[in-house]
Length: 117
Image (cartoon, rainbow, N blue to C red; front, side, top):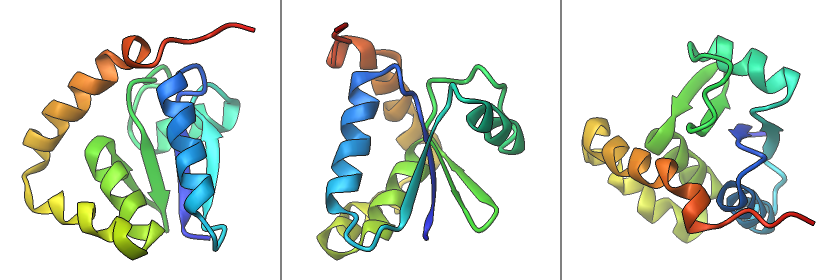
């Protein structure tokens, strides 16, 4: 197993990203934990975040916590193959990458509206 992905399970965009990863994770490297779960809240705390921080994806790997754009790039890198290429964006300073990450995160419910069954 490569690592654990913490995600907002109430967000359609986030859920679609989980499906995207699972579909391409042929080696079963990733484990997924909703931020809203008890385990998710505990992991947020370990990452130094408040337990109601639902606008942030967290990627935990070997005890190291990657947040926001660094988490996304780490996940893509660990997916392997051609998905490593976007991981090269890590050369852009995190403050710049995270500006765009936060812009999407703040508007994620508008980008992929939640459909209630």
